[in-house]
Length: 273
Ligand SMILES: [Zn+2]
Image (tube, rainbow, N blue to C red; front, side, top):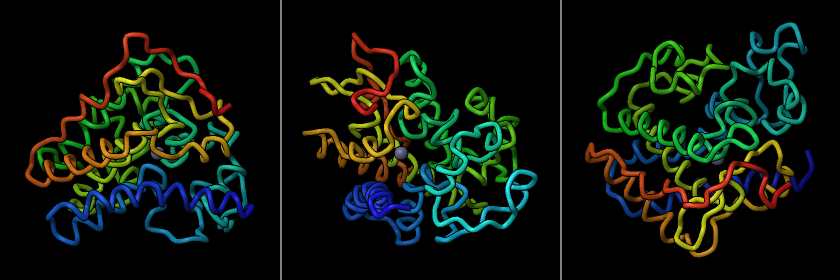
């Protein structure tokens, strides 16, 4: 991988962890919870491999029949470059679906070109609702259950990736870790909702368009992975609210950051094509 690509990767994860750390500094919860929330905010990007360090080895069963088993890759970016054109092969990999497939709403993005904005909005709402009930402890899941079979609210999102299990999404089977990671994953969603290359907002801070990643130039997208001008404080406030409220078993109210503008448009690549 090029030097630039490495830096961009680190910037991306740094972007999420630094905003989450800023919010965590301001709240009073125990250190273990903080650590899992910090991990959680990177899980949207790295689900299934957050417990691994680079270089890592993909599980043999996933790679069987197509590529040499136990192939060592330098990073997830290498995997994308190698297999990014084979969605059929990776339909049951959460990490693949969250970037190239049907789970793009985990990054506040549309899963296809010209998707109606209210469709993407509804999917993002489903994620927040799901993470909220986990975070406040009012839902218990079997980590080994297939999400498509188990969760009516998320079923349509997993229509094309029916084998994905909860533990693949959270990269853990531990109940307490899942509970805190759900909070971190909401922080990631909040951060992406205010990120320039993910969706466009108008001057009233309403969403005008969700972007579609596949149409974007990947380098341009990464360069646009920063908070839209003037929204830093709002982003931090929302992350703090999310962490503080869920710690008190109050669901995070995400509705105000998901308002669509009157002239909201179907998805495209924006200025990042
Ligand atoms: Zn993201």
